[in-house]
Amino acid sequence: MGALHIVVYAEGAAERLAGRSSARLPTAPGHPLQEDEHGPAHILVKRALAEVCERPPQSLTFDAPLRWRGRQPKGSDLLNERTLKMLLRWPRPTLAPDLAVVLIDCDGEKDRKQRLEEVIAAPSRATQHVVAMSIQEFEAWLIADIQTVNDVLETTIDEPANPENMQPGDAKEAFLRWCNHEADNIDENDARCDIVRNLDFDTLSRRCSAFETFLSDIREASEQLD
Image (tube, rainbow, N blue to C red; front, side, top):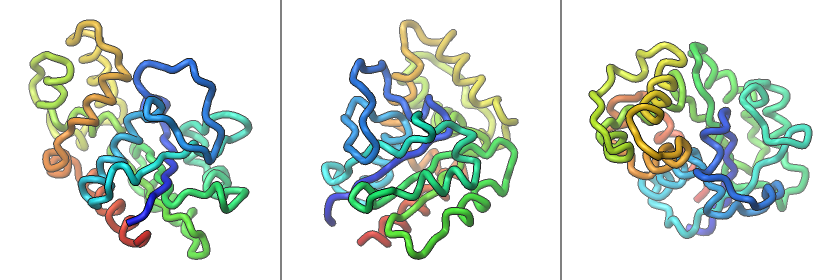
């Protein structure tokens, strides 16, 4: 297996951004991100490729994604079919990654993943694409492994009911409440990164069908790159 260049688009800034912010200027699109620029989404994708697809971690490089109108793409950009197509069309082949992962929330639209997959499906593209959709939001994956949450936040929280049965916004609200009221002197972004680094994938797959689908899609994309 050779080196793999990956670009991650995430709907929320909390998934894209690393823990405590760096004073470094934003990395130009197509250029490698530094380790301290990796947010929870990057950490999750790296773990999946390393642990599930057995790709050496040192072979995985995250590149800065394309910008939209001079800024980092935000949630609504990724859900707009025309905009998403443009964000996955690199102007120069030398800047194109091997794999692009688009992380979105379901937000009550159960067919959202299928719709976006159909939009970006293009056999002529050299870049493999994965649309990862959490139900209803990324925080559902964060709170699914309550043992890891308790270890990181140094607290004791009872395991919530099935995270994927929560209404949109409930998992996010619960996670923010725990960070603000259950933990002392902890940065919310740092907590997200630490939880993702230590999530038990077996627990997460068992409790969140969308995460199991994400791992399956990552595995399939990885196999296509060999």
